[in-house]
Image 1 (spheres, rainbow, N blue to C red):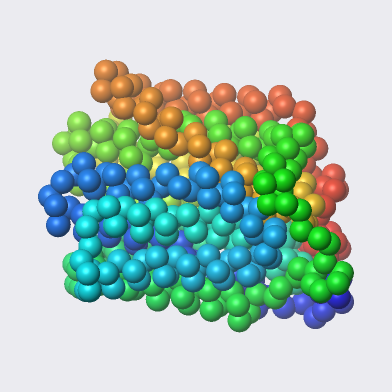
Image 2 (image 1 turned 180 degrees about the vertical axis):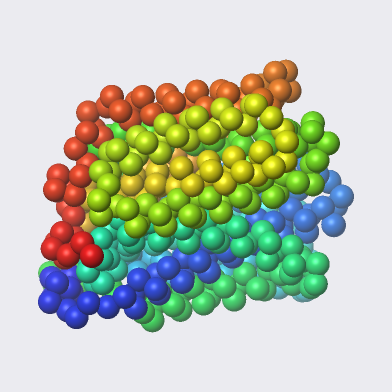
Length: 425
């Protein structure tokens, strides 16, 4: 029986929406805490900043491949099941660190292996949670734009709350014990998804036979490249990530260090995130009246201008204000692109398509960081911010000129959930 076919007749409920948002918040916050706790743990035990950096890289590098190859697993095993499994496996990988430390001991190679293993599960988990958004939107009879704006805002909240909570926990109970808090978060995330997010996959005899795994991965890549809107979305995302990724790790820390206020870097970056949360939620409010294409192009253009503003002054108040504004104006970008992906993808391919697009965007991040270093060292952070603004302007021009993003309104979406089209409250 196709459970999804009964969704339109089911009584509208927002409980699955809150459940998905809650599990997302727990999982994202848990990952952010691990990202802070592990380098500090390594620094405490070895005193080596190089090893701490290697551990941080081990947490980030697997995401590119796990998003690509994990998306196909999401389609094969189901979105809800994959989300639950990803969080449980993340909990197990993190729990292994303190357990091994208490028993046989914990060396750097084991730490690296377990950190990388935990990151492997993040890609499928991300793809599964984003793939579930159309399901809970249809169940609640809410617009897909609203669900995606809430989802992106929750991602941002987790990214802001995680490091702050990590700092408090590390100071009180130490980095190793802090890992137990993340184990609990991952477990609660899986439990919440299992308990309140309905499964919509076809089961039993009505379920079509699964494709060979490697064929399904290839089909995801092929579909993204041949579907104009998806290809344009992926390339726009790659351009944005290429230029924006070095801001938090290289450019802003260098600017604050040169200004003699390195301790204030976190405040500026936090306001970026807060602005992004406000902007994402704001888009969910105006999406009923605003054109998607105009919202995307306007957000990209304003983001380009805002980043150039960082080259004008290092006065702290100016940086804080501009960081908040930049976050707000860039807020609609992720919700709009998420909706385009979901509505342009057949239901049975949703996981692999979302994973493929995420993988392509993540692949641009290391290149951006490598290129940004020499620019900052030889030309200064102000020049780097001008280049970032120009890069965002390039992404704006591409998004405006590419045919793939010219027809992305709700009436032009081939796979939009029917309940959402019928009710846009």
